[in-house]
Image 1: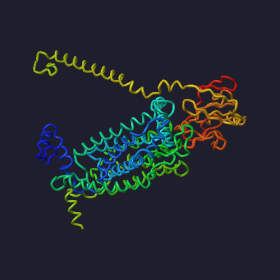
Image 2: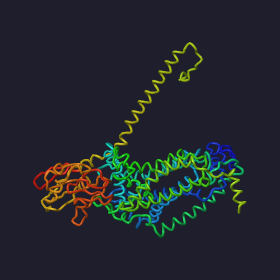
Image 3: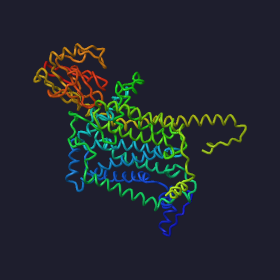
Image 4: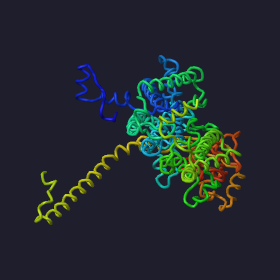
Amino acid sequence: MSGSSSNFKSNSAVVNWIEHRLPIFSFMHNQLHEYPTPKNLNYFWNFGSLAGIVLVIMIVSGITLAMSYTSHVDIAFNSVERIMRDVNFGWLLRYIHMNGASFFFVVVYIHIFRGMYYGSYKAPREILWMIGIFILLAMMATAFMGYVLPWGQMSFWGATVITNLFSALPIIGDPVVKWLWGGFVVDNPTLNRFFALHYLLPFVIVGLVFLHLWALHMHHSNNPTGVDIKDKAKDTIPFHPYYTIKDLYGLGVLLIVFSVFVFFAPNYFGEADNYIPANPLVTPPHIVPEWYFLPFYAILRAFTADYFLFWPISWLMSAKLAGVIAMFASILVLLLLPWLDRSRVRSATYRPVHRLLFWVFVLDCIVLGYVGGHPAEGVLVTVGQWATFYYFLHIIILVPIVSVLERTKPLPDSIAASVMKTHAAE
Amino acid sequence: MSDTAAPTGHAVSGNAEIDDQTRRDFLLWTTAAVGAAGTAIAVWPFVDQMNPAADTLALASTEVDLSSIAVGQSITVVWRGKPVFIRHRTADEIKSAAEVDLTKLPDPATDKDRVKKPEWLIMVGVCTHLGCIPLGQKTGDTKGEFGGWFCPCHGSHYDTSGRIRKGPAPNNLPVPGYEFVTDTTVKIG
């Protein structure tokens, strides 16, 4: 069952007529039906398809919201309130879109941590992993610009703080910020272009998702053992119906949890201050980004003049610029993970030290998120600085060293053998 | 274009082939260079459209009447969409601003260079860290450890001359271009 030779056959003359000119039916059959999938995937493998479905939900709810939204500073806030009160089911569309953003990040962060735990970034899936990181970056840009559109206080001041990050760049900083704003402050031109780009970027994400899937289907899914597929007949099962049904079950669970938030706690993830119209002359006392940006916000704020990680570079740049660079580096460094981790064993199941460090890293990210959500005062400053230090220590130092020194546990002979062993043990 | 894949079998045409190769390389690279330059020029309008438009730039100056501001009071006016702090400073504030040791300042500047008339401090009220509006304009506001302004976002303290003294902000609050039209009227921008 090699990728190109298809078992696809149809009795329909119409299908065969189209197939002869555009082989779309055999393509779908090969990639979604017969597509060989490791037989031992656990529920963590649901999150890729869930992310795809949430992307569709976001695009559909977003396009319908855009039909009633006005991107002008005088009208934007009220147009959102009109959607909430007057537009038929407008409240539902907006709450789906608001909470959908949070769920998109929940699903994608679990998807990324799953890839890290099971070594899914390792050869030959490096490009697959890197495209995933670019999808994350595009998601962050989209979410940030979307949050500006309701033109509340958090929208305005979030946009001000984040665009001001670029003012840290030497020489070109100020011109770049004015260029981003289209003026001397965040104002109507800024809102307009953010709306245009917020509409564009999801389709860029769709394009990246296709590349992501293309790269995935070259070497097929990784699996909990991290062992390659050796015998397709024994190690794999067809995607349909086995994983279509498993993914559908996962989708049902996701939609139940999602509905709880949409219908019973629609503003749980939001900030009350964003229901106050934007006021360029009054800064809210405590500006926080949305929860999914908090760990990166904590890394940004960790860089103060007296931070020990800043000392070695303090002759070169300001603490502000160092913080901005560190924040972007915290995501970009993930691109190097396939080469920093030199272990030939993929799955952390067989790597005791790496597995322990993985969970410490997850904890570290949660600590960073907590620190990012609270005012930078007292002991939290120190906690944030050490958590930032550990974040980079883990990826740049610990992962490479452990990958070379660690004594791994014996791997199963094959995916089939690992499944049989589990059954024999029961 | 049949000669683009010149056969290598003609022994006599060795030099001619090299000439041919060089000529084709030259054509290839000049075409690429002209294409790249042309593309760069064509892209510029699409980039430049994001810079401030003519009408935005035209809103350049604001006139303010200072006669109603008592000593120790501050007002905030809008210039180019940004808040501008105008403070009628007390004698104490002027004195403490002038007495500061310049070597202790992250962004050294004398108070004299930051004002045209010592009693009137005029500056852009946007924190140089990440653009929040510092507190200190209203009487009830916290003014920070140096009696001037305090930015609540990330904790920057400014003194009575608007100079950064403590916190993550790298620079003093900027002084806009302004001139006194009369003794009690100032034109900003």
